Length: 300
Ligand code: SAH
Image 1 (cartoon, helix red, strand yellow):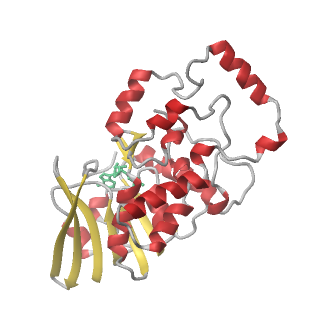
Image 2: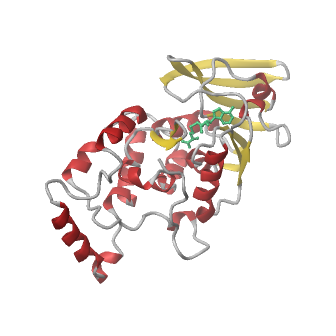
């Protein structure tokens, strides 16, 4: 998968809300086959399916249409059609994002601020174009370097648990990946810091965020297991990767009363909420099962 920055809209600056739809690619009309793809599935399954499909664009030509016919359709589309130009690609439209948010709400996320943030952030701009038609299904998707963009439900759930209905001043995320969750966080917290240990992913997140102009989000390249002492303490910390335990350094960078949400485990992982009750006191609660990529030490 390519990590090269995708083309970005032409006029700057653009508000985050202005970036709701990518221009439709030539010949990439939604097909019945595509809508059947839209079922919950793991990133691994997606990856395997795409490997089987090969590197040729899986969504290029509508099913049952020969390449020359597809080319003819593409040529037709190349002609400017004034009525159509303003229309959003239905697979990445506000409506499809609204459906995603409604699904997350049905799954039990109640915090309206979090749901509004999920509605506002265009998830399709954080995945490779080859996956943009799947950006609003409830699944993690590959972002390269064996890493994934997290499943929308779990992103919302972790933020809801961390926020606990209260205001958030300063938040730390471990595992920026493509920058999606950090961007959602930027809409519910005053200041957000996010650390990534894989340099090309840190760069990818920077490229994804550049057109979105998110002034209260700072990306850091480094080992998140050490936290970010220079910006601590944080009243919320989210780990987007699973360790066998939560690093002590992170516990110590919570404010008293601060809340940390992390997947813990190896093959079997559970979401854990750790609250700092006092200077040397933390309480822990085990929430639901989850599935995250591993938390790894060091930088690459
Ligand atoms: N927050 C992302 C999810 C990224 S996947 C989203 O918006 O969907 C988890 C990320 O954690 C990976 O990019 C991985 O490289 C990173 N990661 C794992 N261990 C880490 C560490 N010690 N420090 C920082 N990042 C880490």
